[in-house]
Length: 126
Image: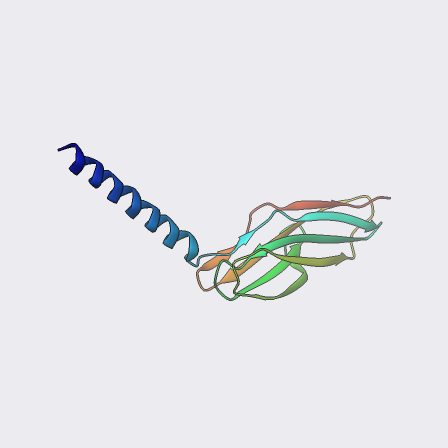
């Protein structure tokens, strides 16, 4: 009786390990994954925004947006369909001196769009 229980436990461990191995090597595609952007003032009316976008296995496009309602576009492009984070950078121009401007990164693929309601801010000097 003890031998059968031990054998059953060993089979269960082997099956669990095989499932974990197969699921970790074949990641399911999904919506893009973005990082909160880093924003830096370059002058009194210009800034730079950088961050990363992981396409998460599907062809993905991105936009770096800024303004009160994110109505302006600093950069946009395609980053492919890999499964690693890709750096994206955009230059924000025409800012008011001594102001704070909201910025964000959005990304879209066939599984959906990630459009954060909040992002970072560029604080320009005098």
